[in-house]
Image (cartoon, rainbow, N blue to C red):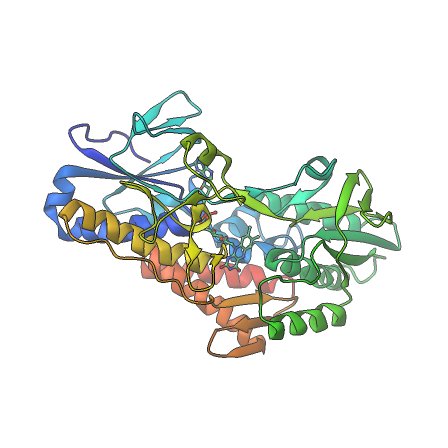
Length: 419
Ligand SMILES: Cc1cc2nc3c(=O)[nH]c(=O)nc-3n(C[C@H](O)[C@H](O)[C@H](O)COP(=O)(O)OP(=O)(O)OC[C@H]3O[C@@H](n4cnc5c(N)ncnc54)[C@H](O)[C@@H]3O)c2cc1C
């Protein structure tokens, strides 16, 4: 954590240490390493509301790992990487602070502890937060899946249900986007692992119902992926209800628009996200999902850039906003950081040319995944292994080699514990 910033220098501030923020910080660090002039003029600062960086694509596993199998700290260290490790021996300084407002007139970020910091350049990389669409009871009675703590709370509740005296209980997953599908598929695993761990004990059978308001699951994915996922979900016993919105949630019931009621022992909320609420304080044009409108250089205004879930970037070729995923966030971070350096050096900025679609690997229960690699489709164990290799590659990018390997190996041992 940063003790003291050099006040004789201006600040390049990266707000948020997720996929976009970490990538931008490490790329700017590279430029700082090679150019003394940059180091002389600027501090490079990351502000994040947590002292670690969460690898969200693996969060679904955490929600299905039996308690006590590994110490919680061990599980946490397999997917939450301390910023101190990432930025050790770099020119990046970091602060653990909640940003509550961004004042463009004075070019300052205000924190919840009353302090503030000024910026010369700013990259907005604050990600997204869970959206409950004002559905009565949804926030109060559901389990979101956005943070490590969310994953653990959900795991604890599901384990409590599995160990209850009930013969069958229902878990409803609201929202059949990628994270809804991944977590719904994982509970079957969880039950059978619990059965293996306590063969003498009667355990509750969990019935998982995936509820989606849209006409199909995995909106925006290729038909091949959707068909494969439906087949796989049915095969592992997940019931799919599409075209039916949730209108209200009570303690033990989920009420649907068609008037039907599902008694539910737990509701997982994967129903939607919106960009970080603090972006509203900018006073800049926002998209319907709350991201900041940016130009082709990812600029919201001179010297202010937005990446990842914060960038309201319109793909001119498809005439659609870009999907929110880790790959897009990383690619945009490359462009935004290069454009900051270009602006400082007085050279031309480079536009972001997004691909027509991004590769994506969807884990669908046990060690089975469905991969749309854009140039090819694969499924099953090879796709799951590829997902793990991509995670390893990412850890190599953000950490020194030994730490990367050790973090990844921890994750593999954790992921194997619900086999
Ligand atoms: C459960 C789950 C599974 C996912 N699986 C995949 C997947 O398999 N593949 C994929 O490509 N994408 C996946 N995604 C989406 C992916 O995580 C996001 O699109 C990506 O993280 C966006 O990157 P980002 O840098 O914009 O934001 P994030 O990575 O979300 O980072 C934002 C950072 O800002 C911090 N922050 C937020 N508000 C404040 C504040 N006010 N003050 C200070 N700090 C703040 C947050 O704590 C966080 O560290 C998944 C998302 C979830 C929730």
